[in-house]
Amino acid sequence: MGLLSSILLAPFTGPWDGTMWTLDKVRRAVEEELTDDTQVKEDLMRLQLELEAGDIDDDEYLVQEAAIMARLREVRRWREQLGMSVGGGPVRVARDDEER
Image 1 (cartoon, rainbow, N blue to C red):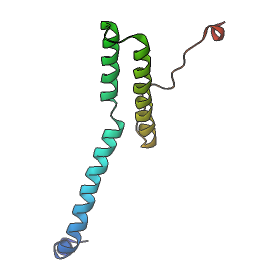
Image 2: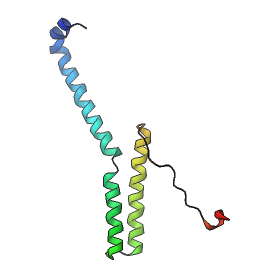
Image 3: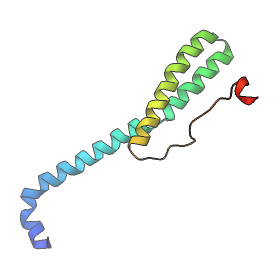
Image 4: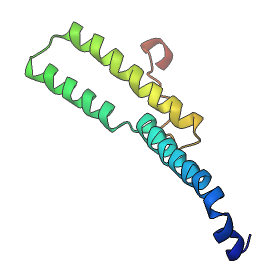
C-alpha cells in the first residue's frame, strides 16, 4: 500500500490499527504479569525470614510454602506455554535409598 492510499484510507484503517495496537499492548502486559516470578520469590524470601525470626512455626511455614511453590509452578507453566525461557529444570531430591 502506497503513501497516498494510506492517507486516503486512514479514516477507515486508522481505528482498526489503533485497536490492534491497543490489544497488542494489553496482551504484552498480561503476559508480563503471568510470567513475572519476582513477587513470588519475594514472598518466599519474606516467609523464610519470618520463620528464622520466629514469627511463624514450622507447620505454618510448610502450609504457606506449599501455596507459594504452587504459584511458582504456575508461573513456570505460563512461561513454557508462551515459549519463554525457563531457568533451571526439574528439581530432584535424592532419597537415602536412591543414593545407595
